[in-house]
Length: 146
Image (cartoon, rainbow, N blue to C red; front, side, top):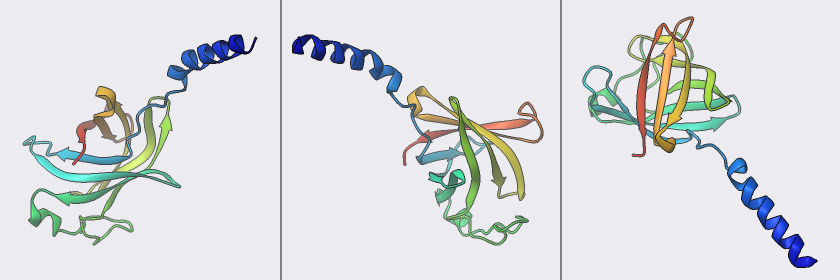
């Protein structure tokens, strides 16, 4: 009788295992790329905060770019250094994607709605910033790791 219970428990756990497996998380270090040249531009860290996922610039490939400040920002990030700048805030999970947050373009100071999802088993992150509806925006693909 005991062996039968152990066997049933093992079968239930074995079948439930894939259903209980968590989706990959975007939390971690990501490599970003320039929209125009396709060259690597920076490393960013996505963290889980009380307000949702947030992202900060960790380093830039071009040291001169890292010396800049966000002089076009119009909120609390105005005149903040690019290195350490929190440019994405408030991303919440929604099924297999994250949305509801905002992303800042430090070059223009513009803040956009955004959504993101993982691809390739969590090795790629596709972030889409937009105004109004998602069709009116642009996407970037980041690669995990530094």
